Image: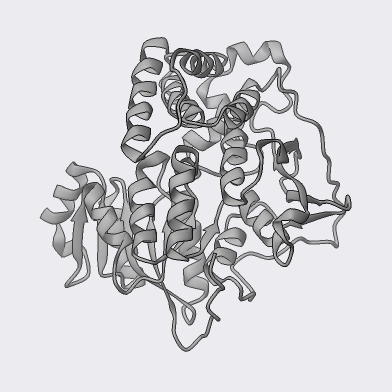
Length: 394
Ligand code: MG
């Protein structure tokens, strides 16, 4: 990664935000609104909510917007008058790629659900933009290719996921060789305190009641299965160039400690903040500058405890499966991710029980032979194959 350019208030950092209407997007807007002298939104994209996108464009004076969904793109074009005068409206994956390469952009924040952000992320890197990454699926699917592209271009990859941003902060000033392991904290999700036998009857409504974080439905279910932590371990391995066994997880119900980084001498550094995404987002967008943000830090005038528990992988098999795919290498993590997306969608639609999610993923992994992909089309092909197979199993 290249040395960061010094942030100056004379020239605002220009941001393209892909996924402006989701949970990360909304928190990013709060951060941008808090720093009108430092940050400027120049491009925004959403999957389908073109009306909300128009409101954001007006509020932040954005002139380039994109809609991934074809119907929404057509609706936005038909209602071009809803956008600020002179707004460029682009559509589909090609539109997102175009936004990711906007000549005036300094940094592209990819926060779209799933693997849709992969091509735009690679396009941003190819255009020499810094990449702020919130969509963990991108590295899970194509970690080798994305990291190689970032190295080739000498651009920065800024982690936005709270745990990875925390690790990134703890690693500043330390050589990689000094790191013994990183430990990501997991809240345990909605079923943290449920007895194992009750999980059989868990409904989508139950799974969507996250105790600490407010997020979209897919990631909230992933928190309940701990697949989210599994995906994060895989993401961490790529981001920080670690061996699979150096990436671990621990249950931490309070979601205040976001990571622990243990060094060769046994010392641990940790990162603490209230569970709000504005902290990692602001850090990624303003790094290395530190200034007050939209949310206050921890209030130490009140008592609170911090608790850590080992993860029971029999109860949370998605974590065990994720670690197995890291060790297996090749396309195993991509298969895990694809099968999980299918299974979670089926669960949310009320078509399979909660405990079927890991079964679908394990069976899909067992039915596709692993290989080292030569290029991205090979990864995309196995992703599609895993989805097709998971559909038949779910
Ligand atoms: Mg996270």
